Length: 119
Length: 228
Image (cartoon, rainbow over all chains, first blue to last red):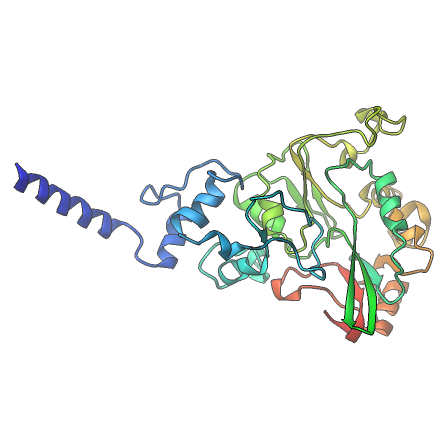
């Protein structure tokens, strides 16, 4: 019985490894294609626990401080929706963090640059 | 072709916030979602310091990342018309805030609750029924809003076939650009090389902010060094 269970475990892991994404580009593609191998949920929202945070914090494994950079915006940070954070909340987000992956040519969906609009 | 743009001269701006007040009045401000804000900060090192004012609103980008992401998730609530104005359809918006998450300028404002300006209740102006308002002023709780370049005024110029008067006469010009007491704001067609805004942009070496995002904003700034 133990041998059977062990074999099953090996087979399951091997299958998951073979089907799952192996690098960042494959992972991004799997998310975009709604692949069942990368379950990030269908709830389109930026709230914690919805798809947005599932992709970045859970699946990608980015630490909170990767995006939430500090307790307040820099004075000269030109950004309309500046807000004061309540005590204990994660820090403010600097959008320059997003550029690395989300600009044209990046691994994730292109939100920025000419490629974003197909031109 | 008409390509509408705004010019903001930070050398002239003195931070009086007239443009903010005008926007709030014209566009039925709700406290949770301001379409126009004033940035105020100090630059330099003591004793050579001064205050820098920079007013910000939606940049109406040529490549709006808000629209890209909205289309990507299949909502299609954001459109960009032939005059370059980016608009949000409140009826289609699902309030996911993805547009707010991707905009490098923080322009989209999520309005979770339509509250009156004063705790005593609605002013007569706020009480104007939605059917008598332009669609861009029929705000709904749980949706995202932003500056429309006062599309309700520009639309009248388009309907009257007088697009050449946009930015030239008050009824066809965004209200914030009308009220500046020091002439720090200007609006018009930048595809017309002879327009006032085109000439001023050339003279003053105006440029966009945060160009590294590649969204090609249609709000230009005159600032120290000609770029920032």
